[in-house]
Image (cartoon, rainbow, N blue to C red; front, side):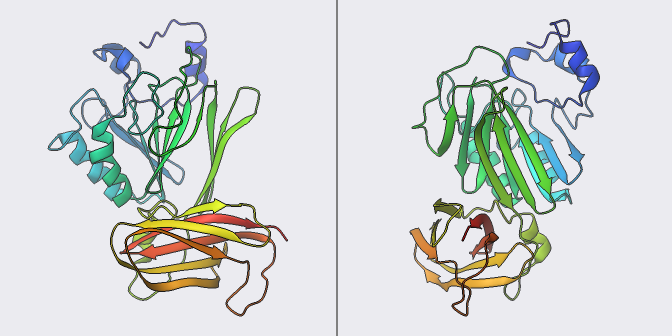
Length: 311
């Protein structure tokens, strides 16, 4: 439970902008509402903007499943923002690494589809006292519960988990226009996890709505994965999955948006697919060392990942 008299709490709140989702230890939420009088849209859920980011805060201790006012609000909120980077913050994770708490099925079945539809990059949760990240169709689900309470032992075999670490930590996000860099760090500065999301500000193919794609690129529902190695020297393998047959366009761009190579432009069947980029352009020439964007378009969706070429 939140205790405003706990040593250091008042000092921290006086110096930091503090936005938080209510947790289970807040019980009825009376103290939470008293000491955090946010501009609630209803119950204890609301949203705010910070620079290029929009953050929707979910109250899991008020109805948030199908037919609830909160779920309807969340969809409207995500649909109406014009911020290019979108995040959801809640307490009980949809995908995490065990340790005493089950994954939340409402997040999985009802909030995750909204994240895919409206280009949410990261869903932040707590509840479990460790660090974990799960990748679900390109949406990153981060469990950041290593702020000081006794730690739990995570189980890396849980579905979709990419990284899990029993460690005190904090998370840092840096946004530079269309590139988001995320780091999870120990108090001593050791890196537990890091990833980069790229929104490609380009229009590829006829009939595309660039504004619609901009909110989805880098975290769309296709889950393009750079499997190995990255950075690379001679070739890099790209993997993705399709739920049904679809026309696929897999392209490589410079970070400035210049088309470098078209790896695939064909109809593929459902299932897992692997393709390789050998560091050559469409003319068969070696491209220079640098950062490149791999973009996948299929079934009306777009997703992108960054690769680093080192000659």
